[in-house]
Length: 493
Image 1 (cartoon, rainbow, N blue to C red):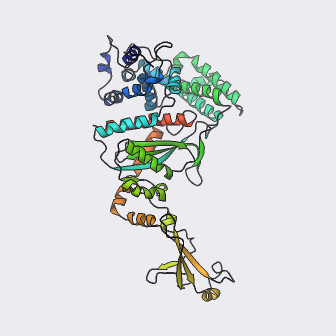
Image 2 (spheres, rainbow, N blue to C red):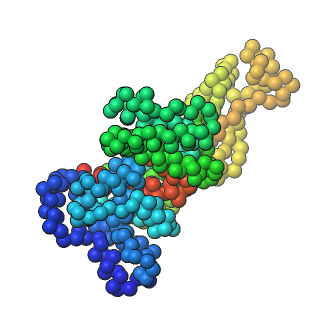
Image 3 (cartoon, rainbow, N blue to C red):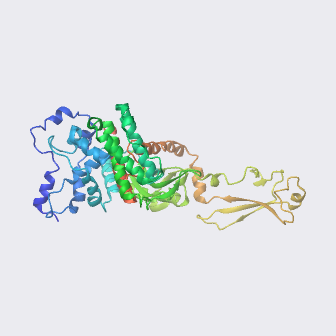
């Protein structure tokens, strides 16, 4: 445990130290700067409270402030840059230093410290729910959340090891680096090392190391930000490949399906979001997990985070019976705005199986125009079991029917056509789908698709940056924390 003295020392590191140059921040960092606004919006001491027990007070030199280390990771997520570049930019970018609560002349950390922070300090911490809870609390406090609906969906993230091999990733990184160089100095083409033409990973690694040395030999060129960032990314990839290419397969990731013909290898993040576009809950699973079964957990997490929910909006994956039963659970009366599977609402008849229902006779008519002569209901009357109505036709007419081929089996003693009867849950949902409330609420579903796009395209959530589901949860925590803070700031104007 930390002593009172060590506690105060660690807390002191969280504040901007007095400096003769501190006034520079007022001159250089604008009032509307995103990082300044985030600092003003949120008190990051909750990070200190969460992690303080993971620091030792009597072993080695004083640790870097946990809040500052967390903020480094947050900067990395906000601007989608590498560990090396977030530290380097913090050296000269005054908005970064202001955000990190450093004096202008303070030295930055070594980038390797970020890896240690992730592995040693954030390990076994439920960072995902901690950060979501914090942003939701702020949104509630600022009266941003007014709706009582949550929109649910799942977004997939590719594993770091797929769909590209380590060889393909290295080649893509080296190509981007060469392009950045040629924009600055096209004559460098003649000085570049010869590219590896084989499919051997070791030879590709050797080529990348030669390429690094070649570009670093020109100090002017390698210091250009556009080149330097690509160079650092290649270095990071080479380092990761050297450590992981033998055991490169992500053992936690699994194959999932985006459609019948499209699959991916990675993870799914199941999200709940208010109509105001504040994410209220998230669950990270391997890629093969279905969407619908995660709804009860998303609902519970949202409610635990202080959200009042009377409506859930989603696609047909969330219209399963167990989810429809949520409306009766604990008398919550939660409405599920999700279309029933077409096989339930429309049946699963083939295109040429055109038995039509005659509502006046309450019977089906066969393709030849013959009306069924009787019907019988089969199956137990139970809320969880669909019953079947079987309609029976005059077998003597079937024997001589011109359309009997493929319809009537010679020698059969009966000819029937069966239709599944919806459970009371499904019947109620079909009626609900026709209401104006359902139609109005379903218009909000697009919002979560846009939010998924922001996570992926702006904050790098389309691909895992490390191996394992724990790392994916940490990546999700920082990305969701970032988009929620940005949304709160926008709605607070």
